[in-house]
Image (cartoon, rainbow, N blue to C red):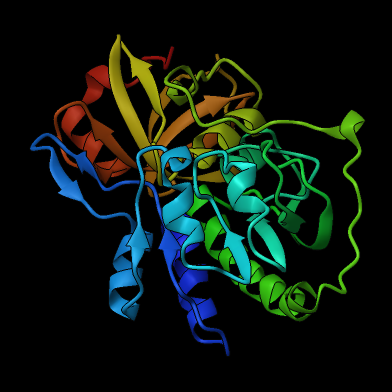
Amino acid sequence: MGTPIFAAEILEHLAGLDLNIVASVSQPDRPVGRKRIIEKTPVHLISEKLGITCVQPNNIKDAVEDITSYKPDIIITCAYGQIIPDAILNNPKCGAFNIHASLLPALRGGAPIHKSIMYGHDETGITIMEMVSKMDAGDMILKRSIPITNSHTTETLEKELIEEAKLAITEALPSLIDMTYKAEKQDETLVTYAFNISKEEEFISFDRDYDTVSAHIRSLIDRPVGFGLINDMKLKIHAIHETKDTYKADNGLIIGKHDGGLGVVIDNRILVLDQVQPVGKKVMSGLDYINGAGKQLIKVRFE
């Protein structure tokens, strides 16, 4: 049971093990883009590739009988996107288990990878847990951790976590199927949340410390992509790199070309914007942007 590319890769991995996958469950296919073309979810696409039936209810509460009719021995979920009712969770004889992309009880919710970077965490990881009908609150069975560096984006960190998740579920599966696993309750006093990215969180304020600004930008790459404001105009930021170069000026000041991109001052250090996207235009290099914007952009400040 899952929806995005993370879940699709886990499904494909499970299909390569000695398992009989009787069905998958995904969120419905939805229209995307300006033309509102219906796009299949990644789990739906992989299910078709593998010849697996994909159930896609608008509300999973309306699909209890459909899902339980497959008589699963075990349910594995990963980033499904709906709270699953007890009538489904209690159905399989071996139980229902979740693959969550954080070190629980930290970062329960739908955007743990984004928020682990945005909040400046030093590490994150994968937790295999029992499923309960409350968001990411089940007992923990297995964890794998990885460090977060100042070059990680959500895209690159997700790729690493997918590989960790494959290792984790492969390690855990025998004890889940045999029902011999040991589980540890989450410490409710340590619970934090990672709710989906809001529109407000997409705005990058440059009037903060260097590490916070860098982390905020990187947490939104490659989706949904954050933006700064120059003279009230949005500039989306698709790629950056940090430098140790110094420049004494107000936060957000654009100093022009620097280290192969567009240099911006934060905390008297220079952050380089490598790829940007002005409103109504395609993604371009920071150099191309500054060349097109010309001298009028120099000494202008990000709000």
